[in-house]
Image (tube, rainbow, N blue to C red; front, top):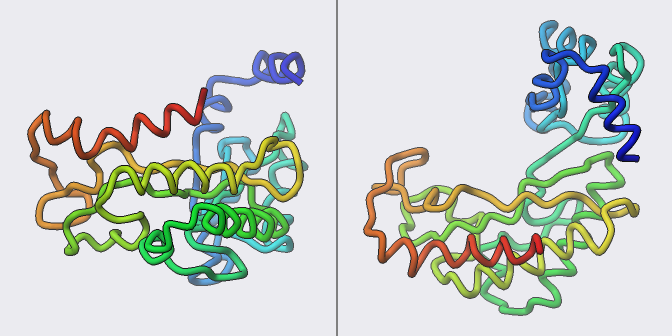
Length: 219
């Protein structure tokens, strides 16, 4: 596999390599399968690496055929979606399910979500969210486990395990994406994408433990 990938990379132009970093949104989940002519052209020219916000096998199959049949190197796309608290089966929001402290069932909910998302043609979920959220004005507080770094880190561990299993090559698994950047959830006034102002001590004591726990998952 590595040899094949190395040979493929050798054949790619710089523009095609940059294109593999391009994740575009085709918002099927909100408005129907709307893809602009420019997006379709970019996919056909091998300038897209993945698609966000589309799902169901029929929709993804149509998009995938554009990439595999039309591009010079026939590289398939990666499909991602915010599978936050279930996919077809809906579980309590992360802020709610964290109140259970039941890691077995939290992991199981991630496994079910991965099975359903994989069956729909998805490869990647943007979950779990590991931001420490201590300001209820921030609108994304529901996506995480709340204010406690220890609880959030334990939930992140089991959710990643639930999504990915022991081998991503197997069916019924999807890639997890632990988000966001450190301190993202500590925005001033609870306003999304706002500035963050805090001391170094508070950063290391309250917020970075989440990040350190995540890196232990990679070892």
